[in-house]
Image (cartoon, rainbow, N blue to C red; front, side):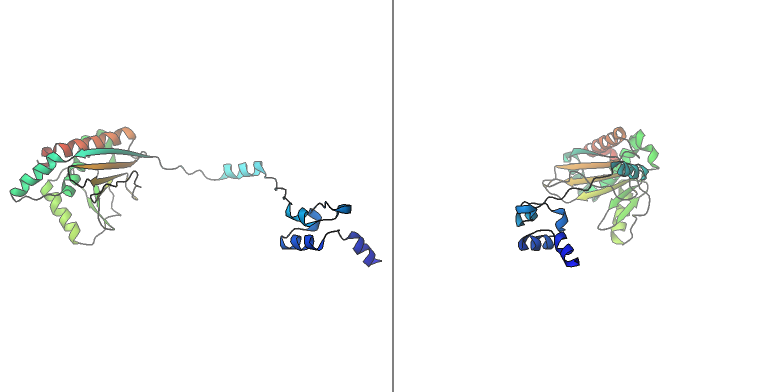
Length: 243
């Protein structure tokens, strides 16, 4: 009696259909047979499309609303091309008198000058500048007030040791890229820095491409653009940086 009941409840299916269903993890009860008497055929298994589980949208909305909101940092980027002809001639003239400076020294001084010339950047707390070296940083706390000779001495001393000033406060990090025809379109800010200036000198040395990335929560777009304009003016009219 029990055997008869089991056989009557056994779904009609071809042996191949049963094997396919077993391999695909499909219960025969979920299939609709198209064969004689509702017999499940291989085509019924192969053509089976599962019904998607309904999504509880109210629950998803509730969980999303309950999640803490984290504001994404607001970033702005500005680019400028710097003419280096006047600076190159001035550096060559100074070198002939025994006073040797490189573009790193001038950029540090120009960055400090730009902070002093930009009222909107005054809130950055004295605006120390960090020079990015190989895997570390050197912070110059008074780039806007010291002479180029002092900046050069400090930079050479930083190159000679292994100290890393990445944890020291600074408004700006400065990175000088090697001469190349390839230049970045965006650079991430370094931790603890509100601004990052990337400078790529052209192969011929007659101009450089600058990219300034800023966190607008620390320095708004107008002040950042004014800062870059002040730096460009200082580099292209460099005499003021040597006094």
